[in-house]
Length: 452
Picture 1 (tube, helix red, strand yellow):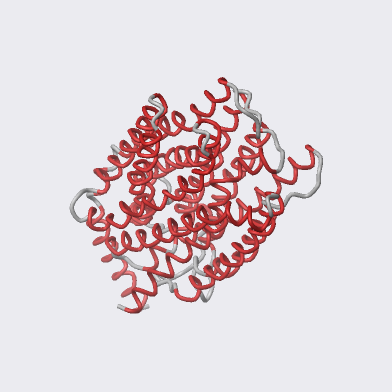
Picture 2: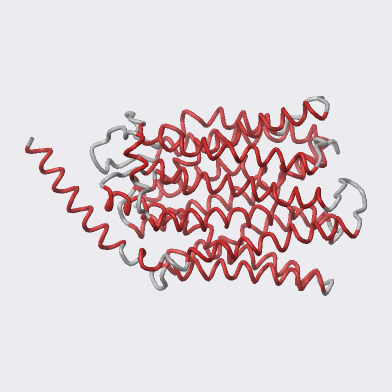
């Protein structure tokens, strides 16, 4: 029991370590670019788009590298050790503001954001891919995913409660100086937490470990319908989720004229723990497909609720819709990380190839980062199109652009994420059969290997 608790909390620590840096990027980078670093909204959207185009290359490459990794620590675990310091340094440099002209700022922002993004894929993908090597039990995988999500939300809560306040205090009102002093503190914490995960998470060998050829890894994608469902839904979910939180600072400052509520509102993201912590209990009573679909549908309703609050000039309704959106979306956030392990099993069952690295790199890290980029770029383009100008009173047109970005872009993409989930039910019922057949195959392979 003690060992099990250590594994669970160490798994959570890997997610907290990532969020200490990635949460600042997800929630505040767009506003940092436009209002602190002095980059136009259109240029910021271009930077986010180009960085995300890199994910079309780096996520599959990372996956292939993970599948070819063979070390005394396993396939996934060593990357916590190897990448924690480079990732932390890249996070610090992303929020550094050297005195450059507009062209220089764009190049610097693009280079540092791409570096941080690529390294985040490298260190975050093993958090997902190691799950299938920690336990073969699907229920324990759900439990570990819940602990991971707990760690994620704990990290997000900590960052949202502290980052703007620390930036103000340490920077003495100078946001540029504040971010330059705050980010190294978070970076050091990130390194420590990843090292804790490296120390305590031990991979169980599922089969004889060997590097996979690129063609073998790609074969696990062939005919893997559950993985495709997870991929599409996750990509649309992250576009919606990031668009929502990225535009929140603009919405609370310029639409509601309550910038003091930004940190509090973003901190409410932690309330999604209510649904996440209930997930193992709910999955024993309701199908994962049903929970997943209800969560996404509820997320659409939450955006409509916010719209009603804006139309009625009701701050209470706006905050209620905002809060409900976080709570209900927690399930849609957590379930894909759990069922990705099931899609790895499905790929092995169907093709004989277990490519956990590639499947999770594209199905989790690529979706998260591509969704983050598009979820930031689309609102940035809309703000530019509607003539947003930072740090001044906004026109009716720019207010309309903020409303569209904050309310309707997330609603549309949550609805798009729901559609593929409706087809997941048949694959969920195969999980028990797949698990049993794989156990038999592995036992036979082990017996043959021993006899030889």
